[in-house]
Image 1 (cartoon, one colour):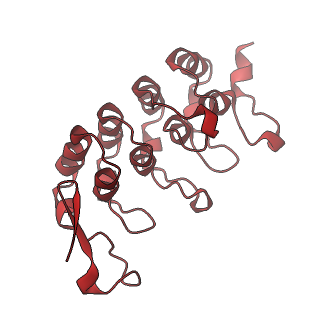
Image 2 (tube, one colour; image 1 turned 90 degrees about the vertical axis):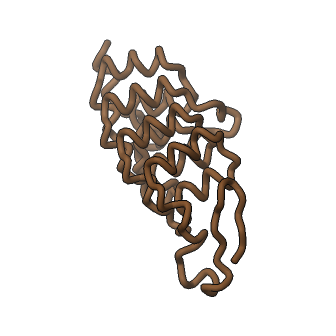
Length: 186
């Protein structure tokens, strides 16, 4: 029954489409590919919380016992089906931001970060709601060197951006800057 891939779960579950449910339980690339083949538009459909499947694939909004390595093949399949998802932030109430922010938060590997930057290069220059740049997150989370290099290639000016650009956070003289993967305080 291929049409089942386009049928959302009951509202009370909050899981949306079968694709959301599969990603919620960290299904592998074969399951995700089968669901996308049956209903390609699923990649563009947010769940009840406004999260797109791409956010789920990055390990956000999944149960703690289901967290694990972000699968580059799953992210690639979702981006192929709906590349615009890379530019869509989650609803503010979820606290997840852009998919790139979520990927850096979950310490996704260089293949995933490169795919997200290819789909939406401007993400490297977009601070998260706490005013930190993606490069700040990568450095603070001890990201792989290839991740830091990809972010710097996409937005070289990030290396000179203050840790916080929000004037309400600290006085101008107390702002930190990231150099390499070390935070230096002015």
